[in-house]
Amino acid sequence: MTAPAANIESARLKVILATLVINIVAVVAFSFCPWSDWRTGMALNLFDNFILIVFALRARDRLMEHLLLFGIVLGFMELPADAWLVDATKTLDYSIGGGPMLWRSPLWMPFAWEIVAVQFGYLGIRLWERFQFPGVLLTGLLGAVNIPFYEEMALRTRWWEYHNCRMILHTPYYIIFGELLIAMAIARCALRVRRERLATTVAAGVIGGAAIFVSYVVAYMLVK
Image 1 (cartoon, one colour):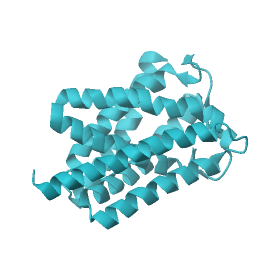
Image 2 (cartoon, one colour):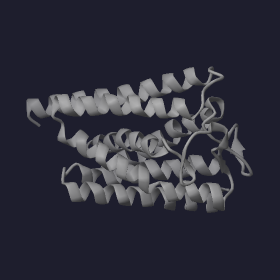
Image 3 (cartoon, one colour):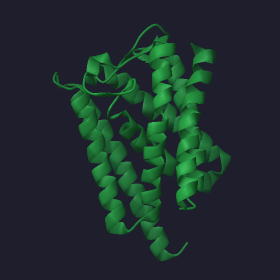
Image 4 (cartoon, one colour):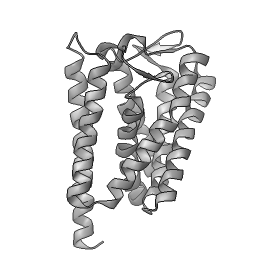
């Protein structure tokens, strides 16, 4: 890897890890705010997008541009999974957050999944390139720890809540297992994004969104 390529990889990793840390700190802070609702969720995801888009433009980072496109396609393709969780399993409830809805999801939810896809997509790329399949498994384990953190805090931030299923504290067992599978799927799909081809990136986002649906169904059937 040439020096300029190594520099952009390092800078990209730093900015993505920064969004992970910022999100964790912000969610903990919002959990202490009695006025937190859908607006704090929207604000956090707009801020994440601002950081990532500014970085992509200033660094002229084509991979970051493709990761953002991959993420937004995946985010909108995830909507059927949300609808299934709300209507079919009747375990997910977004009513506590209020605000405008997009089908059965809060308006900001596709953008939340966009950020998750960028974060775990790029981490998955780097871990695959370092460790091959064990890197994908490690990405899944990271997802099984990190993403359920938001599931647990969502009740405190008044973004969503769960009912009618087995849970550890406020997070369903099937959600933890499902998000392990999802993080692995995002990592595998993001490998195609590395090619930086428009059609390939869009297709990866579509497949990633479908994989979220399949992961939740499998997890729910096995662990509910």
